[in-house]
Length: 228
Image 1 (cartoon, rainbow, N blue to C red):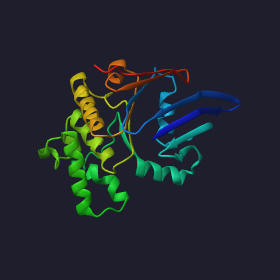
Image 2: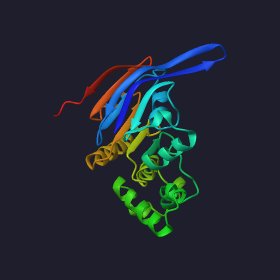
Image 3: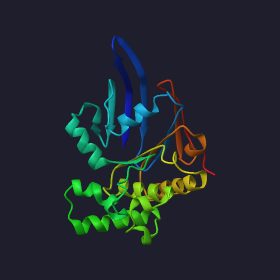
């Protein structure tokens, strides 16, 4: 599904070049659950932006479903984000005065899916996260943090993306609630969803089946979790 080959990213500030990614290479297969872990300043946020088609590398190639994302225009990148990637962010990014169903169905509006189908697909996505049905008609600002993150996960799922990209998804949650959200990712992966989790926390990364450690813009090590 994902093939990164010698990805570099350099930012230019005035006359200064700032290298952030320094030849990142790895492959993620369809159906994997991978954590990309690194400390602040390691380059993981820049890498996440490239994986999410929010930015392009300076050099190297990024294949997503055999398409070279690194060579696409801004318009083409927008289509990749809409059709192939579901995002889950630390801050939820929900519309506070819209219902749960409307928040989840929102990406389908942009794809011009009929209202009845939008609603049904939103309901099915919400069911897959384990959110109680009696919350579906609530406004998102009436939910707990954990419930809001489940809604955000459902919104990421509703377009049937190739990749679910989660950026510090438990960062605004207490430990117990964060564990419930991470359990949701595990259950989704068990159903075949490909998940890439960006985190700086070891205990969060341990929920994935594989951890790619990055430091100073390079892959430090790439470890598969041992089967118990």
